[in-house]
Each structure stands twice: as structure tokens, then as C-alpha cells.
Picture (cartoon, rainbow, N blue to C red):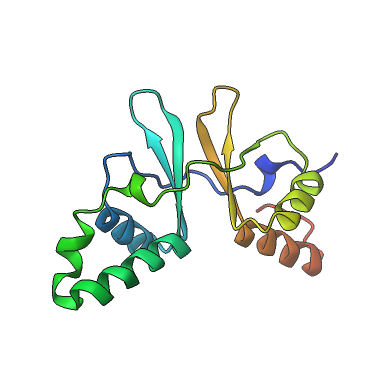
Length: 147
């Protein structure tokens, strides 16, 4: 039986709502040790954006350059997360094969892809780290691939 995205994805997913700020995203990514944050509309539970570590760092550096370290947090709190979020992105479903998605992921140089159900609700996230974990298990010859 081929591996599916459900077998390798990360779940549950940490996320933010569209009214969150850059400061909120900075705190969550730092505190949780994650690099990607889906933005989910609370009323509809729909995915409306995604913020990556690269986008966060870019905006934080711009704020540091303009305002300095002393004002960083107050300036981050003024930036709505949707101002920096990607609004166009690829998604994947839980039942897609890992082989199929891995090729697409690599070809398009993705760092992550939100995993959505039939109603476009986020049920997980697929990251490059998930592929590395899978590779390690395969190379180790792990009998139980997903313990």
C-alpha cells in the first residue's frame, strides 16, 4: 500500500487568524519552533494565507533597519499578518500519494504545503522536515515506519 500524505504530515497545526499581527507570528514561530504558519479564518475555518519564516525574517529585518531594536516589538504589533502572508499557495490532500506530492514539492521548491480536507479545512501541514524524517526512517530500515 503506497504511503499517503496522512502518513507523513505534521498534525495538529499551529495557526493564526487574519487579525493577528507580525508580533503574534514572531512569538508563535519562536515559542513553538516552527517555520510555517497557516492563516485560518475562524468563522469559516478556511485557509486564507500562509506565513513562512523567510517572510517573517524579511519583514523583521526591514523593521529593525528602519526603527531599531528598541521599537521592534511595538512596530511588529502594528503589522497585520495578512499584509505579509502569501495568499496564493498550493495545498495537498491527506489521501494523495507521498511519491506524487514529493515530486511536485521538489519541482516547485516548496518549503511547506498545507494539508486540507474536502471543505478546504486545514488538517495538517507537510514540510521539508517531514520528508527528512521519512528519509531517515527509510534509511534506518525501520520496521515500523511511523512510530
